[in-house]
Amino acid sequence: DAVAMMAVGFLYQNGSGVPKSYQKAMKWYRRATESYQKAMKWYRRATETGDAQAMGSIGFLYMNGWGVPRDYEKAMVWFRKAVGKGDALAMEYIGALYAHGWGVQQSGSKAAEWYRRAADLGQHRPPEPASSYRARDRQKVSKIMKWYREAADSGMKAFATYEVGWLYAEGLGVPRNYRRAMLWYRKAAGLGESRGFGGVGHLYMYGLGVPRDYHKALVWLRKAAALGDRAAMRDIGRLYARGWGVPRNNRQASVWLAEAGALAKAAGAGSAGDENLLPRRFHEI
Image 1 (cartoon, one colour):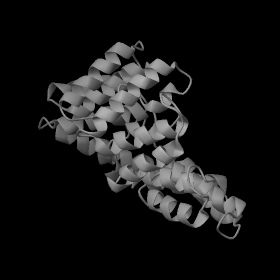
Image 2 (image 1 turned 180 degrees about the horizontal axis):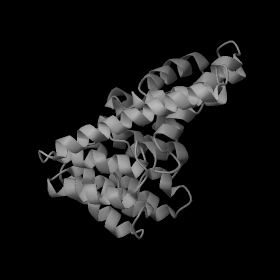
Image 3 (image 1 turned 30 degrees about the vertical axis):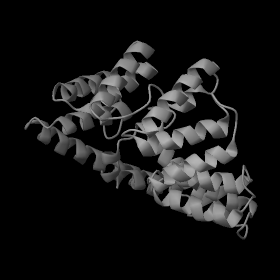
């Protein structure tokens, strides 16, 4: 798929596990771009029949600059068209535009309004990602914890269950408690959340709340990596780089770290939002 093509290009560009070749890197980047361009073509055709999901998908491609120049204003236009057809996911992305100030004046209240509208239609996300609260006041973090707990009991179990564990691991809004983090991560993994598997592996890797166990760490991290979790890929890379539980292997370390970096780049991390903003349907492009 397009994300995998971007990852291969990144490996050749950096010479990670393969001989460095800018020519081959460019070839793979072009193939990825062409894949997104084909997706755009088919989405546009689908919009002619009033397909709301296709309209939202076009907006998402514009928001990330995948196959087209990044254009937040065009993204908003297409998201609003999708919203007009009742697409909850498009409402979520309008919320993201307001939350980050992408192409619009940043507005937390408008972002929350759109997230709530999406949630009312079954597209459940928090008012803001928990990670955005790292350096902010504890009162707000407590509110987000309450939101996640309520959500974990409702329709967005896997996502919210992981986030509760993450807040316990970080000690945000609650006293840091790695054992509780492990409990919530395991629950999330049981619900199929990739970051739940990765969270369990990370705690085993560093002996946080449990005895350090590199073998168990690698088992859990590989499960997460198989589901596309790039934080788990980074941790696997570190295990190989340091020789923790596995023979030290710089080549393997480079491959895993490069793949994580390539997926971050392909997903627009650091520029067009975090991995939580990637809708499931785009993994199929």
